[in-house]
Image (cartoon, rainbow, N blue to C red; front, side, top):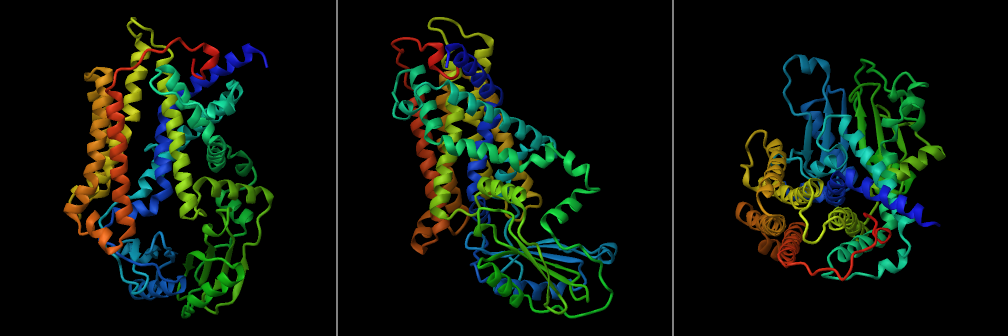
Amino acid sequence: MNGSLRRNMAWIHGWLGLVAGWLLFAMFLTGTASYFRPEITRWMQPEVDAHAVPAGVAATSAVRYLQSVGPDDEAWYLSLPTDREPVTRVFITPNAKAADTGHNRPNELSLDGVTGQPVHGRETRGGEHFYRFHFQLQLPYPWGRWLASLCALFMLGAIISGVVTHKRIFADFFTLRWNKGQRSWLDAHNVSAVLALPYHAVITYTGLITLVVMYMPYPILSNYAKPADFAQAAYRYPAETAAAGRAAPLVPVAPLIADAQARWHAPAAIVTIRNPNDAAAAVTIYRSPRASLNARGPTLTYSGATGRLIAASGDAGPALTTAGVMLGLHVAQFARPALRWTLFGLGLTGAAMVGTGLLLWTAARRRPNAAPFFGLRLVERLNIATIVGLPIGMAAFLLANRLIPADLPGRADREVAAMFWTWGVVALLQFARPTRRAWREGFALGALAFAAIPLANAVTTGRGLPGSLLRDDTLFAAFDLAMLAIAILFGVASWRAGRPPRPAARRIRQTETIHA
């Protein structure tokens, strides 16, 4: 392979990484946090202390409650509890008459799996906020998803061009030199990239595929009147039927769940009940995505009046199966704890890869004894705003959950606002400080922010770290310990950022660095 191709690929790699780098860093960091999105939500609702129960028990108790408060509803959607999310999440579609008469019952509920009674926790978006920001970037639909997809496309191009650029890809895996200025950033970038190269390629490509219908809708639109018609035909979902208008008691749901789980040899995740207490009632049960790499599992539909099996989605074709596996690989709901922690670590290498690439871009263009040009100064400041500011904003989101009164209306939006206001303030204030001091002080502020989270948890709730350790409250203890570990990492980063750099022995040639 000739040198000109490598130089061209290095140029492409550097500019693709720079243009999308700040958003990619945010997407990697919040997406990595989303591997634990149910656990984050549970930590952000300390009042809820539920325990998972079998699916049949949870469904029975939930239906009993729903029958008592809305027997004429159009539909009930039950997300069954798991060991990671031990409450039953219920979404209700009330009938039109109830809406017209001023019906003000909440349409989203969390129910205790045993009693079926509502579980009241503080209003919060929890881990769902990080998950949504990861691919929507807090922008209106569909613009956030379009921008995230464009960044993912840039990332895929940067991965391919980076592989072509590397002449010593395997040797770079074992090379990490400290205190060597630009050389150290190059080594850090290479190690973080090569260490998890298959993961980075898979997570980027599968992320693009999960949104492919949005930016390539024409095959569906040219063949189906509505996207819902395509979904029904492709996945063989049962057609929605109107209520018959004849009353009929709803059969017990637990035996239907048991039958579905026996057919699949896998747990159920969701139960939808349409037209309850009507002769045309239908109970559809969805297999858990944890049972397979394919995130879009099969469904079984039973008559709600007789309990007879009336429809099965069957096996999807190769294309839809591939799409389901791509989605499953990206969201990793199938992952057990050990694999989930492994994926979490690999996700952090992605954030490190993007962050060190941004720093390498500036290091490669800084000249000794020469004032930095405007573009270099701007990139340096945007690097600080993103690499330091975003984690501090995420810490502010968690702190706001503990500091905002639990019963304050609209507190979920206030938590989100706290994240973005903090991020914005940090991003602006660092412009007033010299670059080196901005890095050091920013990391120090991050260390204080993350260290404050366990303290705020202990002061405002009864589930602080000492008590959690004594009661074997694993989730809360692990969360607080993780925050302290992050605080230590930020403290070390602040100390390192305050040390004067050692001048490199020689400047790295353009073809030796990816971002030259």
